[in-house]
Amino acid sequence: METRIDLSKVNPEAYKAMLGLEGFLAKSGLNKLHKHLLKIRASQINGCAYCVDMHTQEARHDGETERRIYNISAWHETPFFSPEERAILKLAEEVTLITGRVSDETYNNALNLLGEKYLSEVLMAIVTINAWNRIGVSLNLMPA
Image 1 (cartoon, rainbow, N blue to C red):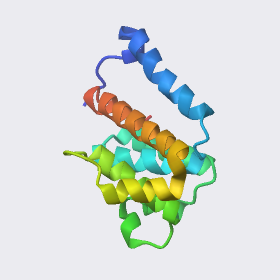
Image 2: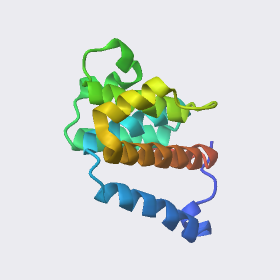
Image 3: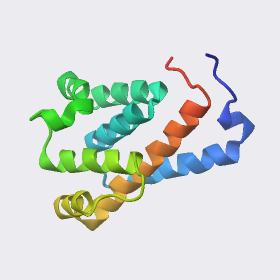
Image 4: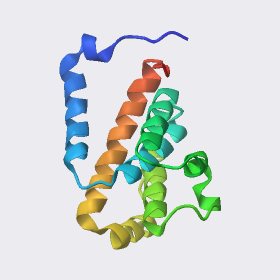
C-alpha cells in the first residue's frame, strides 16, 4: 500500500486549518495524558496505524506507562484508569462510533466528572483526532 497525496502540499490551507485545531488544543487546559488516551483510543477504533503509532510514542515521551498504553483498547476490563479517564475513553468511543447520539449517561457522567470547560476541550480533541484519522486512513499514511 502506497501513501497517496500529501495534503500539506496539495492543499496547504486545509492542512493549516487542521493545525489550527491542534494549536487550540495545545493551548487548552487539556491534560497531555488525557489527550493521548483519547487520541490512541479513537485511532485504534478508526484503524489509523499512523496515528496509533504517533500517539503511543508521544504518550510514552510524556510519561504514560507501557502497561496502560497496552490496555487502552481493553480499558473497560482493567483497574488502570481513573474515573475521569474512563469517562474520557467512553466519550471518545461513543463520539468515534457515533450512530445517532452520545448517550445521556455517558455525557452526564463526563460533565459531572470533568465540568463544562474541560468537557468542551475533550470533545474538541475527540473531533480533531477523528478528522486526522480519516485523513490518515484515506491517504494510506504509514508509520515511519
